[in-house]
Image (cartoon, rainbow, N blue to C red; front, side, top):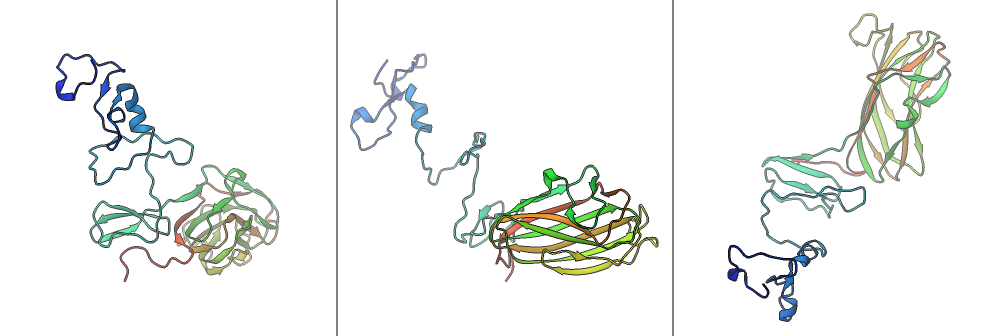
Amino acid sequence: MADLKITALTANTTLVTTDVLPIVDDPGGTPATQKTTFADVDTLLSGTTKTLTNKTLTAPNLSAGTASAGTAPLKYTPTAAVLLSSPVAGAAEVDSNGLQYYTHATSSRGVAPAVQFVALSSAFTLSAASGVQSCLPSASDVFTFQATTTYEMEGFYTMTTGATTHTTAIAFALGGSGSVTSFIYNAQCWSGAANTIDISSTAATAVQNVVVSGVASKVLNLTSTAVETNIRFHGFVRFNVAGTLTPQINFSANPTGTNTMNVGSWIKFTPYGTNTVITSGNWA
């Protein structure tokens, strides 16, 4: 069988890979270029980038991505602040901040965050020493941040220390060429006997509430012999030049004894846009 139109095929026609298909791949070409064989179909469809315009795809199957760039099954490319003029329920968008937005309803648009976190599933041993030290395991203590990006930073540390009097501070060490535009957060700290995590406990010290500006060490409590210290913190931090950030803890004196960052301690960073972004969503 050769050179037959689709309408000329009979129900029991047997097709082979050398049979010619009436597929027009080159509408302006000669008859020889306006046909192909079954063996060429895969090349025709996947060998060359094709552009679909105003086509409806019903339940399409997307191939799996690989470790190589550009092979993910679905990707949104940021453009210069292009969002729908009117929100549409179910729409996914992206703008110049490089963030994916999802419209939950016609009156609701917001950021679909890509949360990056560390949460301890086992206690991490801290040094019995004064001065700054990393407060997370070496395999997960360095966060790489993007240039000109704003992140929401939030975390909670619960620590057990020795009973030698000392203050506790937190800090963040910049690495690489990293620099900040602004680094402002609120921190709360309370201490007490073991297992006094509850702020309202009469065994806990009064909560120290501090607003911190900058990445340098900031003392959060008065000197104390308490063996348990808990810190929670939250803020929006803006980075300028890309680099790394290492969360740290700083004891004013050696607490002695065994010191640990306990299970349940965590920190997360969520990107929200450029380092000058002010709003996202339905604000006016």
